[in-house]
Each structure stands twice: as C-alpha cells, then as structure tokens.
Image (cartoon, rainbow, N blue to C red; front, side):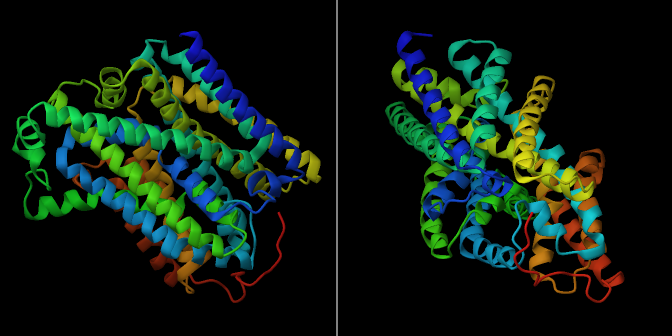
Length: 485
C-alpha cells in the first residue's frame, strides 16, 4: 500500500474515532446510546438508513446478481425501491405514532411491551431472532470487506476482516447510534461517488465497444428479456421472488430504530426526499454496474460473480480513483455492520438481560455493560464470518428472511390488527423464523423465494391464531405512555 493510500485510510479512521469520542461524551444512559438524545435532521436519518441497508450485499451481491440475470435483475430493485416508498410515505409516520404512545429503545421492546402476560416470551423470541440473524448479516459484511480488498490489492481476507471489525466495534462502542448515523453520512458520500463515477465510465466503455444492445445480446437472448425469457406463471413468480425484499424492512431493527430517533414529524418529510433520491442513485448505480459488467465481460466469465465490482474498479479506474471506490465499499460495509452489531447488543442487553431476566442496573452500569457487550458481539461476528464460506448475497438473503418474515408480520399486526393477540404474535415469530431455517430443504417450496413465502405464511399464522386464541380483556397495552427502559 502506497504512502498516499495509507494517509487517506488513517485520516478516515481518525475522523470516525473523533465522531465516536464526541458522542461518547454525550451518552449518559442507554437511551442516549441506542436512540440518541439529540435531534438529528430527517435527511440525515434517511441517508443513514440507506447507508445501513445498502451495504456490501448491494455493491458486491447486487451487482453480481444483475450480472447473472441481465435485464430481469431490475425486479430486485423494483422491490427494494417500492419498499423505500412505503417506508417513507406510510411506515415511518405510522410507526413513530405508535411508538410515541409507549416509547421504547429497540424493536423487540416495541413489540413485547404491548402484549401483557405474553411479554417475556415474545421479548425473548424477538431478541433471539435479532441476535442470530443479525450476526449472520453483519458477518456477510466482513466477508464482503475481505473479498473487495483481496480483489483490488491482493491482501489476505482474514487480516482485512480483523481490521474492519476492530474499527467498527470501536466507534460503535464509543458513540452508539449517534456516532453511527453521522459516520453513515460520511460513508454515504463516498458510496455515492463510487456508484456514480464507476457506472459513467463503464457506460462510456460499453458504447465505445459496440454498443449496449450488441454487447448484451451476445450473452444470449434471455439476458435481454425483462422476464428472463420466462412466460406466464414463471414470469409472475420471477417478479414476486425478485421483489421479495420489499417485506423485510418492516422487521429490521436497524431500520425501525432510525424512526425511533426521529424527534419531530416534519423530519419525516425531509427524510422522505433524501431517502428516495439517495435510493434512486444507489440502486441505479448498482444495476448499471451489473449490466455494463455483463456487456463488457460476457456471461459466465466469473466463477464468483460477486468479484465483478472490484474487477471493474481495477480495470476501468485509475489507481487513485480505485482507492476512493475501495473506501466506498468499506464505508458501506462499516455503516451496516456497526448498526447491526448495535442491534444485537440492544436485543441482548435491554431485552434479554434487563427485561427477561430482570437484572437491575443503574444508568451508568447499564451503559458500560452495553459497550462491553457490543465488543463481545463484534468478536462473535468476526468468528462467524471467518467460518461462513458463503456468498455475501446468500448470507444476506437468509438473514433478511429470518427477520423480515418473523418480525415483519408481527410489527404490522401490532400496528394494524386490533384483534391480534399475544399468542398470534408468538405463532408468527415461530413460523417466520422456523420456515426460514427449513425452507430450502423442502423441494416443493424452493420455487418460491423464502422471503416472500415465509412472510405471508407467518402473517397468516399470526392472524389465524389471534382469532383462535384471543387476548384476555386488558392484555394489550396500547395507550401506556411515558414508559422508560
């Protein structure tokens, strides 16, 4: 690594550390650590949410998916962008209104605190689901970091994962959600640069070398087809499977906690504009990289399609720009991984230790415990990443389903179904997470994406059991105000 590159990396690390130290001084208790005491602008929260959601799985897995699918990969981004529209035009306002009735620090607490006698078992199930699947999700980001640096500079994967894990854990433990959001803003700028500059250069290369249609059709007619060459029922299934990411956001602690950090409703409006514009730029950039990569290299060139992005960076960009783009990938990874590690920490510290097992701590002790626990979660994430051996996209899809298909239906039922019961919530949690674990082993189910199928089965299970086993009178606590963790 040249001295110039090393200086850029060191300056970046120092900047992250300074933000972490600033918010460390601001954090006096768990509420400051998990939700922040400061009013953060809606646009900052929106960009942070995009940086958290669009990480290495987008830049590596998303580009690789488009490379293997061609034009039909558009449906993946259709689902993601539609989810973003629903999130900012309805979900953020509705979720904030519901949480303001009974303020909580975590998604688990938001759900569990509303179910009276079922609270502890629901809290335990939610916290375990978040802990297990978010560690897998966070590990996918460390794997993505290792792949990227290895492809660009030839450095070993494991040392890269160690360095990234240490940096992430340090600034997240210091500053909590506040430091994560503002670090996300810095990282989002770098990500935007990477996802705008590389596609522009790639499109120029495509049109200089025969044009888009000629290059893409050379890989085969199916790559040119909006439905991948499929017809009728199969095409319909393709759209639904590729759009299945739409349902996951409702059950993501890293997404809902950003809404909890919104102090005023007008911040939702500025967040809506920033989120939709940023999402359009990022998804457009990822799709462009995948489709131009297919044009430039042809189908079947890569044994691991997730190396397409770093390969294009190496081939198309000058060395200086490739370093900045590398920082964009690492930035995406760090923003997501830090938020996910914080989510796991909150699930264990607040929901299991303090609420399920009734361990009482004063504010200072609880804050110290959360920070030490976060460091331990960081180590566990690294160890899982070290032994995963999976594609980034596969790990993300599995984790997204595990949380989106279990917590997602429960959040929607908690907000919308006044006949929902605690027993119904337990059924939905078990159905969604359980189906995620066994879906791929049941042959007749594999035609349908687990993220789509498990979500609706869990939703149906929650509704059905709620009608069969309704709550006792007074069990549900919707109007309890000023609750404190």
